[in-house]
Length: 448
Ligand code: IK2
Image (cartoon, rainbow, N blue to C red):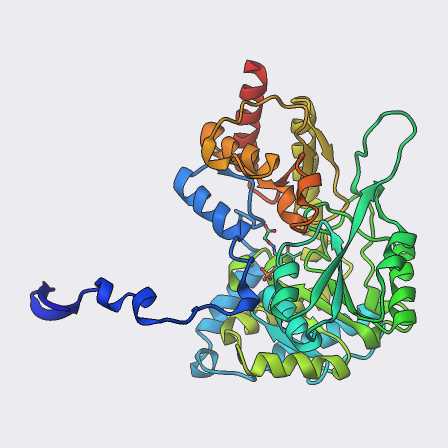
């Protein structure tokens, strides 16, 4: 049905969406593909909407609320003003300047000659690098081992690729007496348990170091144990290292791709968003042997094809600068973790002072804390079927004006029920934001 209506002074015909045009009525077949069934809920969609509605102090989603360093902002402005070619398509698998410097930079770290044109793929954030990897490597019936807790998109991406996720947990080490773990270093993989998850159908394992949400940074020995299993069972390792520069207390990040025999079977995933505190730019990459990367490129060329030229140019300039000052005090890769360490300690002090038991992260953007000591009357009927941490977090947003993220979202649907007692705080925030969060938490604690 059509109706005439005035729009900006002109009379136009508007099509009214009546029942006659409703898809439910005109389509007799189901509209969605089976591969997207059961993955409709998304923690970031849900909590971003809640944050937009209630405008809480936001220690929820992992993005800095401070500016990226001036050298990279200037590089972006220069790129945008850099002539017509900065506004047009560049090389689909990655802007030449960016793949060249990524290859040069990471060759030095991995200890392997990385070919910029063959071994690097630039993507729309680490998200798309993960998506290309799963789509390119996983077949119907393949199993993918995922270490829990894990960045939530791994499981739906494995499902969309037709694979089956098999989970193995990081568990807090048993302590003498009744004390709980206080550091992410105490969360470990059991070698026996991990070994038991490998079957003839295992195609890949996904690890994330430093880990989101826990902050665990895998030791070389732990990575060697994983590497040995990958080699023994001829399995690919997908190593999500988006927080690679953010380690604390002298903890060293080790790339599993740098271990003997692992370059050929590892896809390493990175993010310029996390590297340069510019998450909105959505520039990421996958690096690995061309024997694997060529398959990711097929997915990329037939889906996204290309990423924003000016943003890639700016990231290239940023990496060139970091290459030149690597290992010096001028390096952003040294300055950022030092700066974030203060925020990490500050948040930990605050959480302890109100009786929470934070798990101190060795790396990354986040700190999780046990909320089981907190007595809260969660009577909101709209959340009654949700895990306890999710109900708690919604209550905290609505009643106290503070946003965090429930840690059960980083567990598989099968295991979520057993992990409802932690919430995740992002400490990569301005001091004023952390201060506002402290005021809320302390006032609440004083009133209890
Ligand atoms: N991999 C991990 C481990 C990530 O944490 C992220 C970004 N997560 O941020 C949201 C949050 O946890 O609050 C990504 C991949 C995706 O990175 P990118 O933004 O480059 O796509």
